Image (cartoon, rainbow, N blue to C red; front, side):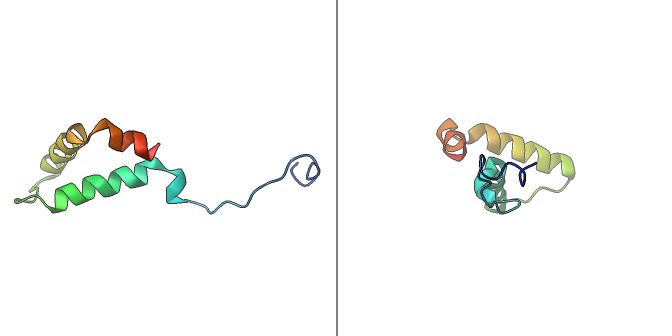
Length: 68
């Protein structure tokens, strides 16, 4: 379809899985850094989940807005 309508619509090249297009990549990096700098690492999957939820709640709203 794009080839048939290439005079009407210009398709821009896009890098697959570009982190700039996915705000969750940036959020994951922020949360990962917070977990790495914890004094005691999580000992279970539930501990990790709790730490991630706590870190997400402590992340300022402006951080999320900056990613979007």
